[in-house]
Image (cartoon, rainbow, N blue to C red; front, top):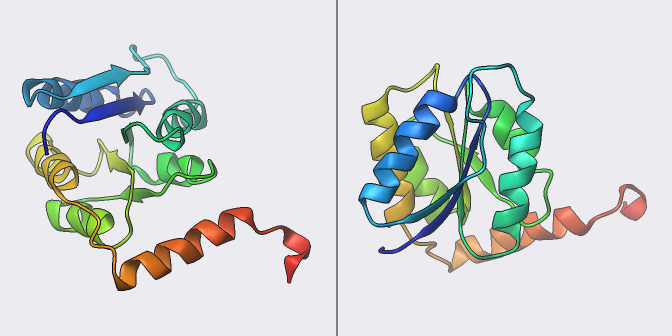
Length: 153
């Protein structure tokens, strides 16, 4: 996969790893729009998950989110219709999130993975395509859940 468009965001706990991964992706020739944060002051991760999620849901790129564990970012980003954010702690889980779940946002934890593992997870996410087939039916069910209202039972 070449010339991928990315949207990246992090809170204060993930900023350093996000900055390194943005550099890594740009070195691979990808276009990356860094949506922040750019400093060490405490910020609220849902704000950055929403920014990245909205861009990804518009359909023109992948998302990269980094916080302390990746979990908060993934939870928040998954509230944006059209986003399928996955937390990965290794290349295998990152690749399967793409091939089986058609994930479009990768969430990583700076306090959980080192730079080498994070780069390999990003590379695997970037280089893996959705398999479709039986997985497409399951992803369609996930999409249907986004449209469901509480009184639809």
